[in-house]
Amino acid sequence: MSTDFKTPTAAARGLGSAKSGTEHHIRQRVSAIALALLVPWFLFAVIAASRSGFDGATAFFAQPWNAILMILTLGAAFYHMRLGMQVVVEDYLGKAGMKQGLLILNTFVCVGLFAATALSVLKIWITASV
Image (cartoon, rainbow, N blue to C red; front, side, top):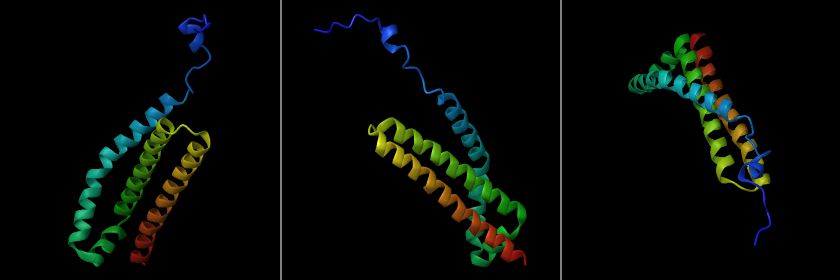
């Protein structure tokens, strides 16, 4: 039999939130809104670029606005992915060491993927316009 005479309020006191949930929620929603605006353009770009072959795709991304919009789309997508994976790791993993390791890996993978794809778009943009 338990001899703990604390009320539920007293037991929960001091175990409050981490104070980052609202900020995380807002960031997730802002990146989702950005993607809602950018994904239709992205789908148009992929269809337009794939219909015209390699030379047409290169010409498409040689235009400044197309390259800029592609980099913005990639940035929003990888940021949104990082936030979503962070929630999954924090909610479903109990071991602190594994949780921290996966959160670090999540950040490195997302930054690495964004850097690789953004540099690819920039290379096409710069070399095609020369």
